[in-house]
Every structure is written in C-alpha cells, then in structure tokens.
Length: 362
Image (cartoon, rainbow, N blue to C red; front, top):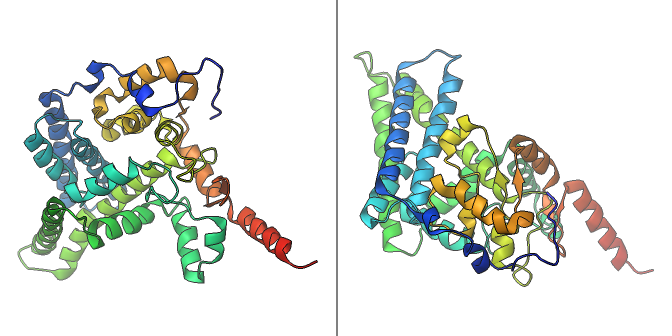
C-alpha cells in the first residue's frame, strides 16, 4: 500500500488526472448498456424462479447468494445510469436506472442525491462524506452503552451488511427524503414496488396448494424477498467499506482534504475473481470511477491503465480483498482526532486515558 513519490511526480490535482483519460474511455454505445441490463435482469428472474420453486435446505444458501449477487449486478447498472455513464439518452438512463434499482429497493434520484453530490464530492472527508463516516476516539468515549454496542457490531466483520441496511438504506432511503421532486416521486415508486411485490409473494406463496396458508406465505416472503435483500446489503456494505476504509488511509479534515486526495489516495482498486466480477461489473476498479463518474463500468480497466501510465506510483491496487476486509475490520474502529489515523478500541481507550492524565494537576 505504500505510495512512492519523487521529484518528477505529476501534478497532484484531480483535473490533471482527468487529462490522462482518452475520449474512447467515455464511449458508451446504447447497445452495450441495454445488453448488460438485459443479461442481469434475466439472471435476477432466474434466481427468483429457482427460489420460488426450490425448498431443498442445502441448495437455498447458494440460491440466496446468487440472488443477492444478481441484485448487486442490477444495482451497478442503475449506479452507472445515475452517473450518466451508461447511456447518452436521459430517458433511457432514467427508466433503465429506475428498474435496475428496484430489486435493491433504492429510489433512483433519492439515492443519486446523496451518492453523487455528497459521497463523490467529499470522499473520506471528515464532516463531509456520510458513508462509513468514522467516529473519533473522543466521540466514541462519550457514547452510551447501547450506542457503543451498536458501533462495535457495525464496525465488525459481521456488521457490514446491517450497517448499510440501517445507516444508509433505512435512514437515507426510507426515512430521509431529498429536497427534490424527482426524489419524492422515485421514493414513492420504490416503496410501492416494495409493498406490492412483498404482498404478492406473501399471498401467492401462501396459496400455492389451492388453500391459502399464512405460514407458507410468510416463508415464501422470507425465502424470496427478505433473505436475498439481506444478502445484497452485505455485498453492498462490504463493497463500500473496502473501497475507502484501510488502516493506511487516514480521513482528512476539510482544511487538509483535497479532491485529489479523496479520489486518488482515498480510493482503492481491487482485482477480484472473474466469477465475482461477472456480477460486480468492474466496480472494484474504483479509483477511475471516482476520478470521473461518467466512465462506463466496462471501460474502468482501460481508464485505470491510462491513469497508471502517468500516476502509476500514486495508484493503490490490491488483490487481497477478503484478507484486507478482515484486517481492516479488526484494526479500523475509530480515528485519532488530530491525525485522522485509524485506531483500535484498545488504542483509543489508552489514548483517552493518557489525555486525562495530562490534564490532572501535579
């Protein structure tokens, strides 16, 4: 992870990095986007069909995993539509993006408001970026017992999915409403889809044998809707976490933060197995996406190569995503208020104790 520097290093501004990108990197013919969307929609339909018809206990975990991955694949399609990266036609962007985000229960413009403006505009800036925003050691020491328990769970290896589900999806997608009429409209569409689809699965799942059975309907809802949604939240939570949380990446205050630092030095590129990348659409090649949001996902590897040709010593690349995730979740708990560097809970407690000792009278 160590980044080398030398006297001949290129200019460290986001604008200078963008100048390394060729025009071809932004080409986004409609047929490619429609093709990927159609493929992912078919995979999602197959996953739902299999879950509806299969109850074999040892097959269900694999089907839930598959279903969660198909939701993730569709979400990346919607993600690129919201960034105006996948289609030039705005109507095509909106309708495909809207449909692609419905399985993950995300309201298209509601999500874009927070993601495009805040996360991309203030990546790993303290007080700015809301995604996986860390608490300082001092802030954590003042938490109540229940808030500390929640924090310890959310920032553990097992809490990533519930962090995303509660802090991002529930609070940001359901409770909060962005100050845009398009956001309110899309939120109504998303909630309507959630209620109608869940009710339909519950009703028809309970009447599969001709006699309606509430227990069977509830099981069908859990099997077809709930668990795949939870799986998707884990995939999403872990994905966002590894993109920007690492023991060697301090979060900066607004005085020290720059767009170059946030997008280049605060964003990691991971090379993942092809089987996973089939669903994640190169989103783990994440730094080029932060350099310029309008690069379609299928050109992110090309963009990475162009950036590396000039900024090779400044590019963070890893191929140990799972190892990094477990190491980071054991190491990155809170940050030092002065430096923004990551600390464990034990280190934070020691730091607070030492500060308290310093203020005691001699």
